[in-house]
Length: 194
Length: 178
Image 1 (cartoon, each protein chain N blue to C red):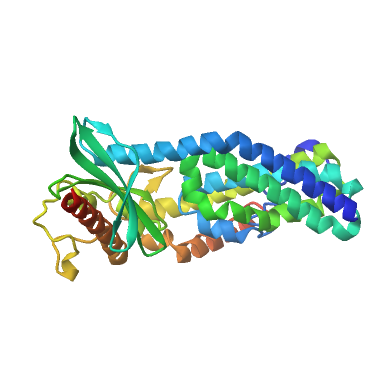
Image 2 (cartoon, rainbow over the protein chains, first blue to last red):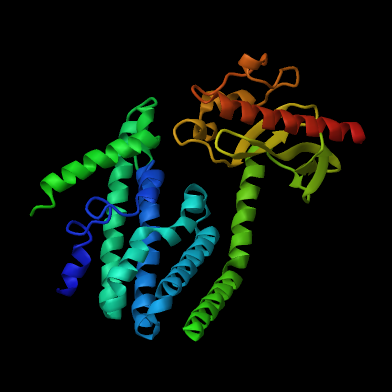
């Protein structure tokens, strides 16, 4: 597999949200607006790239019996680093995402890439894989957030262009499921087969 | 096996310790800025802000700041928390010595986006608290007061109103003591 396709496969072929259907908890919960989706995606991207690098470097040294605890410790470390850095330099984003940042530790995408890719590939390939999947996740979350924000609040990326309240249901949990479902259908019909 | 896990944990702990030490000051500063911004937003212009003080009212401890012009207290900024629909709702409430509410500002909340979270932006709701005279009853109309709730967010509005009302009571009790 070429280096370039390692990055691009995260967008369509192995899109974590619409094809692999992983990491649904943050997907449904944080996509109330395009900005929130984007921030959550970038936070996950950060952890994914670093944990993939660390795990691909550590993997040959780690005995099989303890590999899961080691991976989780590594992932949790990066998540905590992210949490501290966000608190210090992006307190606004930290306030909106709050609870969902620590939950990245148990995000199936991160552990999934560690198990399925990083522990049997080189450091460079693993970094690219993390970047690709992370960008795919970010893009998917931003799109879901954008659709929910337009329908639910009448704004896009915080700019209000429809006056009034919008369809509130789309900002709340049922809207998350509906938008995710329809986007998944469209995605698989028009993009995946190519 | 044991050695490997121990080493990995030690290494991770060392990294975390380092990052914690590096971000400790910036985090303090960021939190302070949020607090300062909220104090500035709820008080009238001018005057200097005192150190943090605490008052006990109705069995609970409140943190407040005095705005001084000369020796006289010009206004109080009281940090007041209640439980909203989704969890803790923390406000900064600016109160003048006569019990008039100057302005209010949300410090932190966990209300539903699109519904209760509008307590940060809904002008029709927030405007009511700006310069609210002491003669008004700080309760929602449903509860026999003088204030309108945010549409479809009665619980959040009630929590917000209660937080403001508590803050005013704290200031009143302070006046009595002096």
